Image (cartoon, rainbow, N blue to C red):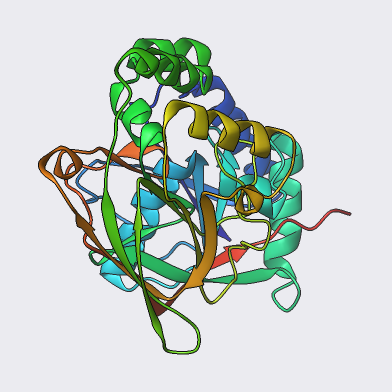
Length: 302
């Protein structure tokens, strides 16, 4: 069995010793390991003779690999060792962060094809896949303004600091959304911030959409009809307390299959968007479910 172990050497969380430990753990389980590395342009090679693709990194690295595999129409099973700043997919699928445990459970899952596969319908923005989340609003601005040195040193806490710094110059945006629903109707809604949620978790252990799952046939849209400082604070407190944010009077949660977005003024057209923890170079126009799927190899404990 050949495992292609893909990593991002430019990541702030990259750790050569943990990567080597993961490689040795797979080899101890009888696998042959070959290395690959992510590139920002997505032009890296998925080895044609590998049996399993393993991404060592976070959701951003995973998104790059999924995009590359989708472009090349490669259907090999995937797994992700949680080595990034944010590991929402790994958290939902129960992947261990201990190299030996991870390798052992993945190898057992790979052999049990009937019970240890999860097909996650693919969602795209303007034709490009993402794996967990996309958003616009205060947190999108925080991701765009965070300090990479702080991220490398403090991880996800760097985003919290960036968000606090926004308080002195709080952004105000206006977006118009068209949401195609499961009953083939279309809702037209206005909002000041919105989130497209595909995974169950968001920004760590937080849950914005309790019903969201990777294998769902739709994505969940959380929209804030207003997002002033006090509104966003209430939103964060609601989530931190483990409560559904849709219970707030200015928050809506809707399942959708397709979303189109228009920024309604010049300030909103310059708003930053984040996808899987990284800033987008340009604002997306269309988000939609596709007929493709990502196949994850699930861990199987002994």
